[in-house]
Length: 247
Image (cartoon, rainbow, N blue to C red; front, side, top):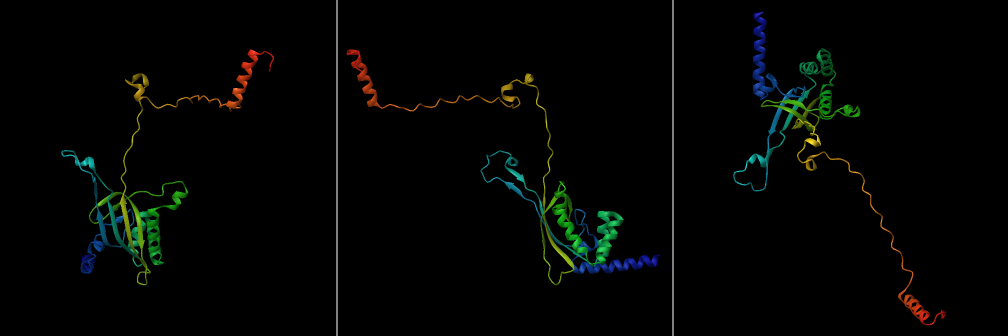
């Protein structure tokens, strides 16, 4: 037993030295990175950004600056890598998502060189689940992001970037841009009865008022006479007054 432990210790020591020499010590020995439940084989780079939006307008002296500034969602960009030639990683990844059955599927995907395709499909599904959208479900579900410096809650994938060339045909090198989503709690309340309100005309619930009756204006009668015609008629009437029966 002691010989076995000594051999394992020696192998671990060589692994640590190799990882340290290649600059991949944290990713190789203590891979604490996770995108949801997806564990990368190697983390090449992480970029974290925390910003505060501040007003461009002048602020009165003595005013709380917090009234004129608000925190923007945190963003994280990670460059991650996976390879088909990692049966241990494939088994662990499968076990986290599907138990022993998932571990078996992960080992099979590594053996058949389908692992990187499955990982890529999982990331695309984590970004936006088309099947959930078709079934009336929620296609975007925020997840936890674990990095080497910090753990984030309620993250979503904004952009996935993959580049493949002749050297990366059987591996997956991906740039993943993620953003935090602020989730708040909302509450509803019931307004007191109108009889208990001091100024019900100002605080009562809005109601649907009855339709107002609008009077239709009478159409303007068109003029059928002219000023000259009216003058003639008045002249005839005057002559009839003087000489009855003239017209």
